[in-house]
Length: 192
Image (cartoon, rainbow, N blue to C red):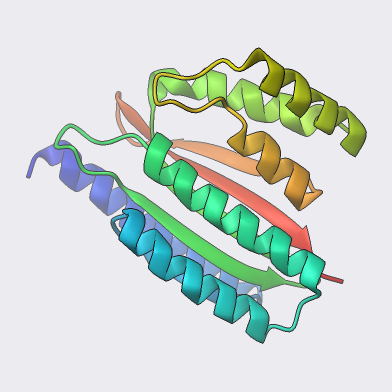
């Protein structure tokens, strides 16, 4: 293992542990905590666990659908768009927790530093819409352009997450090295 891999893996482990401590210290209910490799099989298993745990919370059906959609979309985004370190390893974690009258989905994955300005700009644009109709119009306009990224996406993931959430997306970039940073994204769904 290279020093960069160790540095990145350790960085993610520390952030994962700190995130859990912050959540529990705020008297929030931790529903799911996953730190590990993502692949289609893991995502399928997580989907089953997410669905059952959200159903157990007895949230309204409309909120349940939104939460489940955001969880699946977030996991898929991390798998497809999360960057890999120099050894080809992909670092990420996934948390779902209840805070007051919201369920919050927190994801963290590796991002290359040159990609940060675009992601930052996209998320700021998405958060700039005060009216849900304006965000929907932006989505439709984006969809009509049908521009695919080098990884095959049309850049709709963040927009659809924001639309389903109905709240602003919280995000942060935490520099790990000259090459990579940790990218955290939080989407909250109102359940009451």
